[in-house]
Length: 323
Ligand code: AVI
Image (cartoon, rainbow, N blue to C red; front, side, top):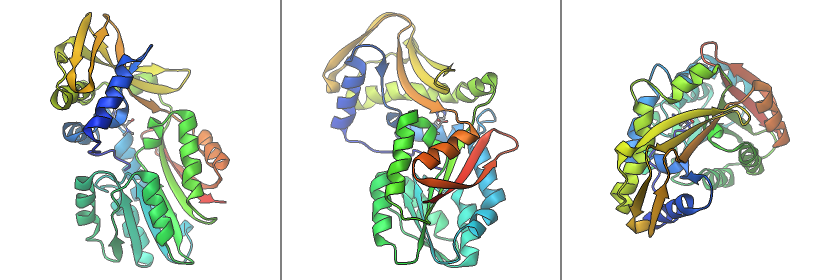
C-alpha cells in the first residue's frame, strides 16, 4: 500500500509550513504529510484494520485475487517493480509472489521512512526470486533512479496503491500521473489503486469511527506541534471533524476549535487566534468513479488495460500501459 509511514521532515520545514498554514488569511490548514510522525503512523496502522475502514482490505483482496492476471498481462521479459510509498509492503507480497513464479524480479520499494523500508526489505526479501533494492527517496526521485538503472528490454511496473492518489487534489493527481509517465517508456505499466464513491453514511463512518482512532490520528498533529514546536494546544479544546464535500467529491478531515482561543507556537514564531467553530483543514480524500480513473490515465499518457472493482468495498485497481 502506498502507506505514508513515518515520513521525517526537518524541524525548520515543519515550523515554516505550520506558520504559513495557520497564519494565512482564510481557511487554516496543515498538510496531511504531517499526520504521519511515529504516533500518527502507528495510529494509521490501526485504522487499516478497523471494520469501518474498508480501503486497505479491499486493496489487499484485489491484489490477492488478481495477482496472477496482473502478472499474465505483463511482458514475457524481465520485469522491474517500483512501488511508490511502499510502506512495509504488507500487501505487495501477493503480487511479487505471482510475478516471481514466472522469473526472478527486481523490486524497489520507494519510501521516505527508513523504518518502513527496513521492515519491507526484511519481509519481502524472504520471497524466492525477489531481489529487493530499497530507495529512501521521494516518489518521483526514486522512480527516476529506478528508470535510469533499468537494463535494455526490461519492463518497469510502477505500483501506486492504497488510494494515496485520493489525497491529491484532482488536478495535482493528474499532474502527478503525468510526471510518473514521463519517467517511463512506452510499454511500461502502472497499477493504480483508488477508493471509489460510496454512500455518505459509509464514508463518514470510515473517517469518523466509533472507537475514535481516526479522531486520535487527526488530533495527534496538534500533539505533534506541542512536542516538536513547543506549542500549547489544549487538545480538549479541539475536536475531530470528518465532512463530505459533495461538489469536490472528497472527505475532508478538520480539527474544530470548540471555543475562542489563542495558541502559542514558539518554534514556528507565531501565535494563532481561533474563533469558536473555526477549523484547521488537515486532509482531503477524493473519491473516484471507475471511468474517471481510466480517463485521467489516458490524459496522462497511459492506456487503460484492465480494471478490477472490489465486490465488498467500492475500490478500484486499474492497470495502465504507457503509450
Ligand atoms: C493514506 N490515505 C489513503 C488515507 C485515506 O483514506 O485518505 C489516510 C486516512 N485518513 C484518515 N483515515 C485514513
